[in-house]
Each structure stands twice: as C-alpha cells, then as structure tokens.
Length: 74
Image 1 (tube, rainbow, N blue to C red):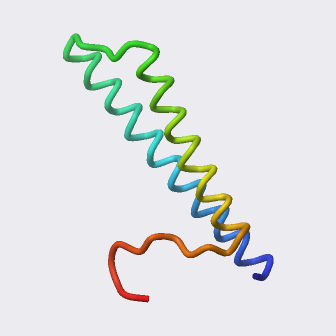
Image 2: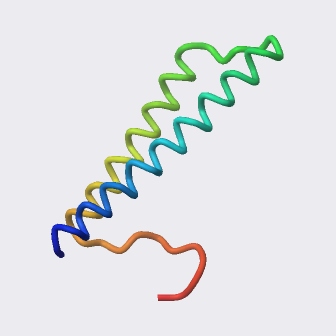
Image 3: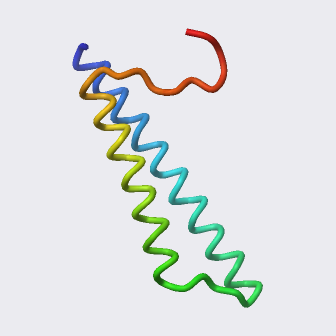
C-alpha cells in the first residue's frame, strides 16, 4: 500500500470518528434540551465505543483487511 493510500485511509478514519462524535454531541444536546441528559457513564461508554471503532479501523488499515461494504459488490 502506498503512502497516499495510508493517508487517505487515516483521513477516512478521522471523518468517521468526527461524524460519530458529532452524532453523540447532538444526542446529548437534544436530550439535555428535553430535560433528560444522559448520565456521565453513558457518555463515557459512547466515547469508548467510538474509540474501539477507530481502533478496529486503524488495525484494518494497517493489516490490509478489507472493510465491510454495505453498498456495492466486491
């Protein structure tokens, strides 16, 4: 794998993590506005799940394991 491929893969991982964190922040904001803020352990658990997803993606990138494709064949 070339250096450009690795850099694009890392950029992809950063985008995935940013989107997941944005979804979590919006959920906390909406639930807080409704008067049901999620407790701190739930927020930390969500961050742990996001970190595990990022770790799996990095390992897949370094080992060359193909990621799961939802749309499309091959």
